[in-house]
Image (cartoon, rainbow, N blue to C red; front, side):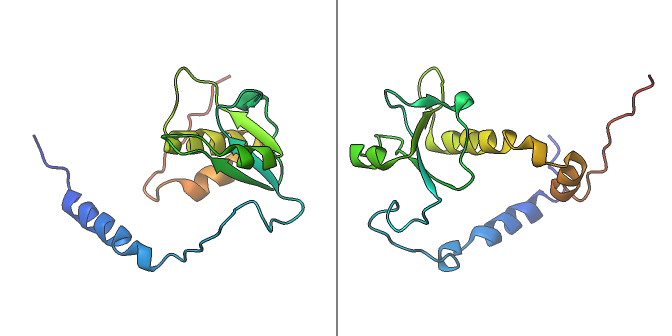
Length: 139
C-alpha cells in the first residue's frame, strides 16, 4: 500500500492547529443560558418531546438560541417550559448530539436558500486546489 503524499505534513498541521486551543478560547460560565437574552431572540429546544414540531415543518426564527439535550438524557422540564419552540428530528431511534446539531443547522441553512448565491458560495468555500466545474449542457 502506498503512503499518501504529504500525509505526515497534514498530521503535524492538524496537531498544531488544535494544540492548547483551550488557552485561546474565551469561556464564559452562566447559570442559565435563557436569562438576559435580547427580546427578539427566541429559545428553540431540540428534544424528543411529546408535542414537539417535526423539523421539516419548523420555520426557524430569524434570531434564535438552540438548546440541545445531552446524549445520555434530556433537557430539564423547566428549560423546555421557557422555550418559544420545541422541535425534534424525525428518525428511527435517536441521534448523537453532533449529528443532531449538524442536521438542525443544515435545515436552517437549507430553508434560507433563496438568499444564497450558488456561485459565490462555492467559490468562497471550496478548497483552493479545486477547479472543477459542471459541464455545460448541450441542449
